[in-house]
Length: 239
Image (cartoon, rainbow, N blue to C red; front, side, top):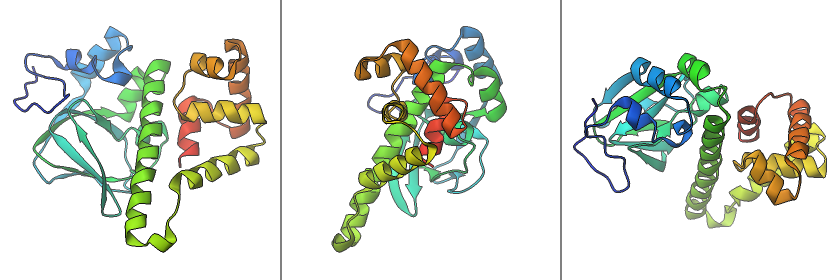
C-alpha cells in the first residue's frame, strides 16, 4: 500500500490505494489492460528523493520515466525554472518515446516518492498501446509549447531589443522539415494535427476527411519521414 499525508490542490489522494489503483488514474494508463497495469504495479521500483536531490540532469542519457506518487519536482533548463510537477504527473517520457537525452534538469522541491518505468517495462507493456502513446504525445506537445512561451518571456526580460517569437521559430522549423520531407499541403495539415496530439478521428473531423483517408495520409507521412509511429514523428518534429 502507498500512503501520502500531503494533499496538494487537484492531486490524487493515495491513502488506502494500491499501486494498481493509482496507476489506473494516470492519463496515459487509463485504457491500458488490467494485466499490463498489474505488471507495472508489481514490477516497477519506487524511489524516495529527499528535498533538493537531483533526479536527472539536462543532456544526460536516460532510460526511464517516472510517475510522481507524492511530492513535487522542479524542472529547469539553463538555470531557468520552466515547470513544477506534482502528484499524478509523469516526467522523463521523452527518453523512452524519442530515445533522446534528458531535455531538462529535475530536482525535488520537497521529499518526493516516484514510480520508475524502465525502457524494458515500457516496451513490453505500453509501446503497442495507441491510447497510451497518444496521451503521452499530447503531453509532450503541450509541454513543448509551454516551454517555448516561458523562454520567450525570459528572453524579453533580458533584452527587449532581441525579442524572439518562439512560436514562430517552431512553426518555421516544422515547415522546413515538412518541405524537406516533400509533404503535400494536405499531408502537412495532418502532420501538424498529429503533433498537436489529435487522434485519427479528431483529425478526420477537423479536416473533413474519412478515417480511411487519414490512415492513408499517415502511411505516406511516416514513409517520407522514415518513422514508424506517431511518437517518433512528434519526437522528430520537436527535437
